[in-house]
Length: 448
Image 1 (cartoon, helix red, strand yellow):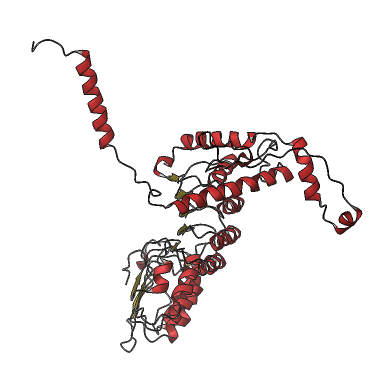
Image 2 (cartoon, rainbow, N blue to C red):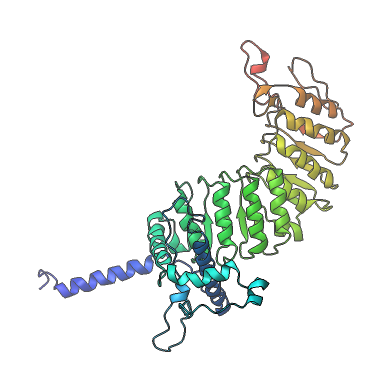
């Protein structure tokens, strides 16, 4: 009997056991919505109904509204108007309750007084004529519902984990329409990542308009995109109306300082927003730490505007570390204004940024008047380069040298020691990115 093969039934049982073990060993995905109460689901269903009506009105008024890149959309009744009743209870469905269908009725007689009063408006006349034009079933919404599920499966961006990670994907106009559709009808997606995608201001405006009544999404990431101050204005309007989003990331985009001010102004009107561009604004506003450390956070000019509004005038901050970020000449004025507002700061680290010659010229007047800072690091900032042209110029370096009363020889062969009366321990690099000269001492020189 030991040499006989096992019966087929036992083999099948073993296969089933293996499958069960594999399924149990698979990573279990935590549902972020399982702890939500009935009020959340009721609110979600209500918003979906409202959005269905809005979409219905938009299609009736102008079938090509926002869909010029798609085929002509046939006007039809929204799904909510044709939802059947529950067969068991006979009551309207919970998700899509039934509403009386539009029926063609005899046009009422309009008296002269009512006609002159303006009660019979164009909208009322359009409503009477709709039943002759519209279909009984929501054909367009039905097809969109089927195609969005196919799109999610095609993207394979983690919808099973209740998120969409679209980083570095090539998205077309049609894809943004389906994304907006998913946001408008509250698909269970709590995180949307569009980093490194070709996202323009028009795409952001479309998403923002469809996210205003979204009650599901909490994280929106748009890093390394083409979003500018125009897109930031649309997002600021979204933040003021949508109190579900808690995390917003627009780093390394085309935003300027004005865009940063726009976002932080909207934050003041939304208490639920906790993080903007990697900065924990809620924590910094309520209880700022003594040592503010944002080393390697990829911060730029907009983020400096946010920090300025959040940390302005804080007396407990003694250290500010902005080492190895993306601070350029456009951020230098905001950085100087931030440092001037922090009266107790003693240590400042701005090393390995992109201030260049223009940034150093802006920082020099502050160093000349400040008396509280004991440690200031401005190394590896291209102080001899005019950005973005990258032409060599010593104006910024000379401005800092004059501010610190440091004697620098014309040939830039060496640095003179700092006088003992100054309270600065200043780290400078000798023309960080100077071109090399053969046969000159400039090619081999220590960075001190």
